Figure 1 (cartoon, one colour):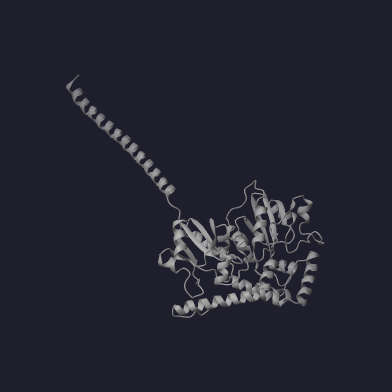
Figure 2 (cartoon, helix red, strand yellow):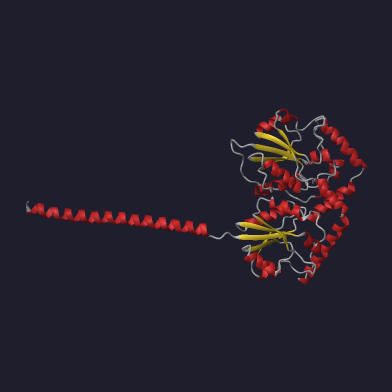
Length: 422
């Protein structure tokens, strides 16, 4: 081998050694980086898996539960991962506010059925005492106590959430404007007072009009329009609120879709239970909510108490409901069944009007002829009329209850150095 060959060969060998080292270093580096990334990924997965869920607590009477209650629970749930709800006992409500319209077992059914609720504590105290607050923190592992921005005042004028605020574990949500249990009681009493012989006459004529297949139209100032209790509703519906209450998902291609319709006025435990049974019959529950005009025509011009959008939100908040038709037609047609791919149409045995089979124009004639109609045995004998009768028979007690609440709030504001302008 010549000296030239020897000289030129040495650099080649050195270069080869350097390249080998570089490649080896890259491979080792990539391997170490991959191992580190893998371990880092496992670390964060473990952190996420072991992260303690934020548990929030909200309590209330939830008497004559309405969409305002549901919206409060929705907002509370958004402040944590799990929502635990305390339902105040009948005895505590009587002591602090007056007699409840809805007994505890019905209120528990209603709260349990709200889709944002994870757990329920029955017979919760009206005020958050230090002892009960400790139980919430230690036994129920509650992180924060939630309430609306409206005052919750004890009979002595003190704040029911003072201890939670002092502990720094209190969070506040915005109250839903336009509705309250007191407001709904007022609507019912007003509607009952305005009911007269002329209303009965209008009811009969409207029923005849509907049974002949005509959709009633109400002119401004007509008896049906002016006597309807919904005219004093202050609710302003928005598309955003409807989206907030919606599930945001439709049925699958092979879903068995169950359809049930009705007024669902003063949404109550009877409604909840029939919806639960209906949902068990399929994969997707579609609920039709009748228009205010339809309800007035079939149940009297003093109905409904809650307007169409208020009733729709109450139904949408129910965990058994997947979708609603806002302003569903009175008659279930073939086109409707085809459009929504309905597999079965159901109706409960307990309802305000169960004479549909005797009517000249049976609203369920089409699904009956198709063999897809089923009558469900209603678990509870409660109707909207039941709730109204409770109010009417105890209206004096409810009036005193509202006066008692007003006096407590006055003492609360006076203690803060100012009087409410409400």
